[in-house]
Structures are given as C-alpha cells and as structure tokens.
Amino acid sequence: MARWTDEMGLRLGILVMAAGKGTRMRSGLPKVLHPILDAPMLGYLLRSVLGCGADEVAVLVGSGGEQVEEYLRSFPDVKTLWQREQLGTGHAVKVTRDWWERFDSLLVLNGDLPLLRPETLNDLLNRCRKDPADGTLLTFDACNPDGYGRVVRSPGGVRIVEHKDASDEERLVREVNAGCYFFATASLARVIDRIGNDNAQGEYYLPDVISLMTGEGMRVRALPMPEEEMMGVNTQAELAGVTRILRDRIALGWMERGVRIMDPSAVWIGPDVELSPGVRVMPNVQIWGRTRVGEDCFIGPGCILTDAVLGRDVVLIANVVLENSELCDAAKAGPFAYIREGSRLESRAFAGKFVELKKTTVGRNSKVPHLSYLGDARLGEDVNIGAGTITCNYDGKSKHPTTIGDRCFVGSDTMFVAPATMGDDASTAAGSVITEPVPEGALGVGRARQRNVEGWTSRRKKLERQGG
Ligand code: UD1
Ligand code: CA
Image (cartoon, rainbow, N blue to C red):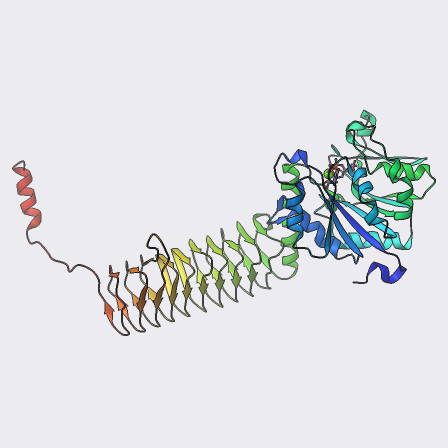
C-alpha cells in the first residue's frame, strides 16, 4: 500500500485514544482490552489502522495503562503515549501536542471502534487528501443514539452536543459523532488550547474543536458513515453486540473463500484462525487462537479448537476439544475426545469416544477407539489400543513416558505404569498392569490367574437359609 507521504509529501500521524476509564463497562479490565471473540478490542482497530501507511501510529494510555502498554508490545510499530490524568478527549489531544505537531495531518480515533474497516479508513484518508479541510469528523445515524454526542447541523455550521449536555430537542437527533476525526495539525494547534470544561461532565471535549474551528472561519465538515462500522463499545451489552457482528463478518469472509458453514450464527471463529477451501463447519463450533485447518476437513458439532493444526481431510466427528495439538491428513477424532497440549495424531490415526490424550503421539494408522487416557506416550504405526487403557504417567511427583512400538496390540484395560515400554509387534493381555518392559514380539501378562470355585452359589444359598 502506498504510504501517505508518497503522494503529497505530507506527514500523517494517527492517534488512538485509549486512556479513558471505561466506567460503563463495570469491569476491572481496561475497556480496550476486553476480548472480542478471542482478541482484545484494541487489536481490531490497530489492524485497520496499521494498513493506512501513516508515518506513525500512537496509542494514548492512562487508566490501566500498564496493562495496555504490555499488550501493545505485540505491535512493535505502535508507539505508546501517556495521559496520566484523564480529563476528557480534548485533554487527550492537548497533552499529545508535542507528538502530533510533527505531522501535517492527524487522524484521531476513539479506541473503542473495533468495527472500523481498513477500506473505510483509506477512503476517508483519500478523500481528505483530495479535498482538504481543517477538520473532518465522521458521523452515523444511530438506532439508539443514547450516550453519543449529537451532530447539530445549522446554517452557521455543525457542532456536537454531548448527550449529557443536550436539550430534549437535541436528544431527538439521531445523527451522532462516531469518535473519528481528521485534522490539519496547524489548524488544530490554533484552537486546541481554547477547549474548556464548562459542561455537564466537567471534561475537556475534543468535539468542541469543531465549533471552535467554525468560529475561526475554518473549513469543517461532518461525513456520514454506516452504523455497522462506527458503533462504539461502552457497555457489556454493546460488547456482545459488536462480537456478534464480527463473528458474522469473519464467518462470511471464510464462506466467500469456499468454507461451508451450516449456521454462521452458531460458529465462533477468532480473527487469527486460518481455514482452507472445502472445510465444513457444523453448528456450535468454536475455533480460536492460531488454529490452521487444511482442505476438506470436517468439523462436527460442538468442537472447540484452540491453536490446533489440522492437515487435509481430517474428521472431527462431534464434541472434540483440541488444544495446541496437531492432526495430520485424514486423522479422525471423536465423538467426545479431549486432545490436549502437545499431542499429535499422525496420518489416518484415530482417537475415539471418551479418549483423553496429553503430550501423546499416535502413529500412522494407529487407533485409540474408546475410554482411554494416554499421557506422555508415543505410539508407533498400526497400533491398536484396547478400550479402557490408561497410562499411569504420574507418580505423585513427576510425569514418566510410555513408549509403544509399531504394530502392537494392547489388550483392553491395560495399565501402563510409566516409565513403560513395548517393543514392536508386542501385545498385552487384557486387564494387565504393565510394570516391566514388554520385549519385541512378546505378550505381556500382568494379572492374577483366574480360579473357579465349584458349587459356590448353592453353598451360599444354603448358608443363608440357615440364617448364617
Ligand atoms: C465520545 C464523544 C462523543 C461520541 C462518542 C462516540 C467526547 C467528549 N465525546 O463520547 O461525541 O459520540 O465518543 O463513541 O469525545 N479517552 C481518553 N482520555 C480521556 C477520555 C477518553 O483517552 O481523558 C478515550 C477513551 O479511552 C475512549 C475514547 O477516548 O477510547 C472515547 O471516550 P469515551 O469515554 O468512550 O467517550 P464517549 O463518552 O463515548
Ligand atoms: Ca465511547
């Protein structure tokens, strides 16, 4: 993308205001760090902003600023500025003056605008470049304008009246200030110190700049935008509303690229996930983190995937929970499997009903079909694990490994007291407690031999009749 400065020789700075308390969230977490799907709200706006080719992007932090600053470490191109006392959005722009005076133009954004698309920002920047003004602000028609600053248009120009300062008549106005402004910094510098705080909240309001500019005979305009991108987040309910919109947007994006989603309203996909064409996703699925899903995989109902890697043609039948694990081509799991950190199903391997795997590799074509716990285990190829097999990998102090060779047959209800090993082509008898290595080709039997007590039932009944 062309840098802003390429075309005009003008320098652009972008200031994201994120120092406010976010009181209406009623939460200890700074507002901009509240998660949407599985990423902080601020991340969505920064993704859009970083595509604009600005010379510098800064985030203003204050309330809960250490936490926000910590999060910003994942954005090395973003500068952190501090507003130690939060006296309002006008004050926020005032205290950053030394920073923004170095640019010709300044885009100021409220930090709580996660729906703003990069294309919309670019259109705005292009428009301001082609048709310069001293101040531009974005507005939208709100379904429910409560809490927003109202855009009052009159022959004398436009001004913003905050909800708390508005008259009943002004409150009827549905066009509201979106919290996104573009300024010529030289013009902004002329009026910024004249913002006062004589209002219902005793705060310095940035939108007052608009009337101050108009009063100076400067060129000011208010551009209407679609509500779907300009909604701010101030409450938990608005956060949930915005989350639904982003969920639908992300699902739609994947459907456009050939992913089949039966019910997009019941599928939750994080912003960093990558899906491939031909993937089918059934209802009530959640896909989070850096999960990657290869072509033609089937993700059945109720699955939750976090940081998982799936090859091609993987089948998750239903209710599979995958965490930080890899399933290679044509592997299969579920229903009701829990595959935990550091596990791997190699090609065509299977983990079935009520199976838990932790840090376990299941080799090619190997099967763990039912009711097993395998932890810290490594299984070779073509292994069959009988129902109820358990690795006793924890001795109360530390974890120990279990290693099973190729083509092994593990009888049902085998306990491997780890560290445990089985050579290739070995077997265990059902119900065995394996405490010694099973050599290649051997059968490990570790259980008491059966003995039958003849006539036991009739003897017992006789004793009962005698009242014994
Ligand atoms: C603001 C606008 C309002 C607009 C609305 C759009 C003002 C006075 N009002 O209201 O016209 O309709 O956004 O959502 O600007 N912040 C700071 N430092 C501060 C105060 C706020 O950095 O001292 C940041 C906040 O973290 C937030 C943004 O500025 O990201 C907006 O603050 P917020 O309190 O949400 O403003 P609103 O009352 O919603
Ligand atoms: Ca707001």
